[in-house]
View 1 (cartoon, rainbow, N blue to C red):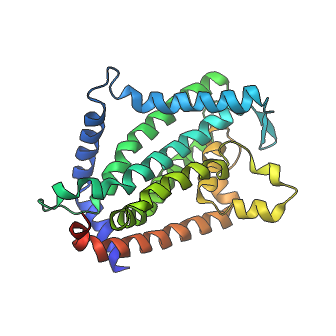
View 2 (spheres, rainbow, N blue to C red):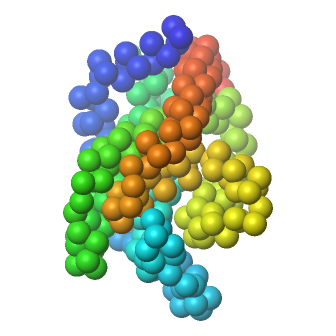
Length: 273
């Protein structure tokens, strides 16, 4: 608990620094591109169109059943991919953030726990922009703003909490053992197919045990929650209260492990250069 408090206190006390450094990170990465930071949004949009073409056009995917209504596969995929993109990009960038900047940080009086958060926050801007684009697209498609949008802030916070807790673990382990980052990259790409982004879990309705195991993936909880907002189907975190308790319990465990590892090893990070 003490380690959790130390890490969270550093985030709150230096939030202004996280915000400034994350903006600098975005600008520095895109300063040599003609379209600049437009690529931060254009890249995931292109990926969505590619997956939609493969899974909906070539495979002729049928509309998805949600809340007793049929929704087009494209819009169903759109929301899932917006959540997945933030989780994947934020986790990957944060996992390698400490050891990539370690030489510079060793010369500064700087809380090292901020570094993964800077990487995550730089991707968080993109996530918000993607949600704005999704909102506009859904309005034109006839899925108008509804009372369920009230819960959107909850899912945004939950997604950020998941990425941060997960990245505290991976950024520490990646600094100690470089192979962890390479393994993480491969595992997360595979996890795309196990997170309910490209196919609905209802396909496993004949295998209830397997479906329940799939629902233990915290990304499934978040993605389904986002979809319940944009399609206006239900108060997902209430109707699935048992998954809500499981989700936040898992976040707490991950945060405890990540904070403990980070606080224990950060004084020795420089030895692993």
